[in-house]
Picture: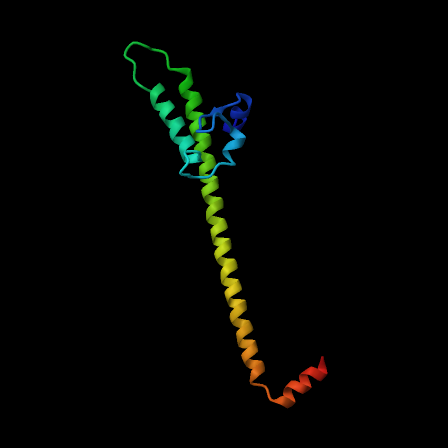
Length: 131
């Protein structure tokens, strides 16, 4: 069973500043935010819960069942963060490439305009008549 299958079957909920979130809602969160409502904040909250459950007991011999669930929740949030970081990096690279292409096209347009300005009147008339 994949971690996402487990999350949907068990209806995992994640703590946030705006209440409990579903696994699907994690994809809509920003990576970071000043408001305390981001993937980073959700990861910190789940990690804090995991650390609280993971405190060592010298009396209890059975493992806390919540630990495995919290570990899976943290893995899901980390997976979503990793994918979102990759998507953001790709989007920034695409935007930079688009900007460079626009700059090159603008420079080409200026060069072509300059080349037209250097044509003689007879050459210009000839080109107009050929259109």
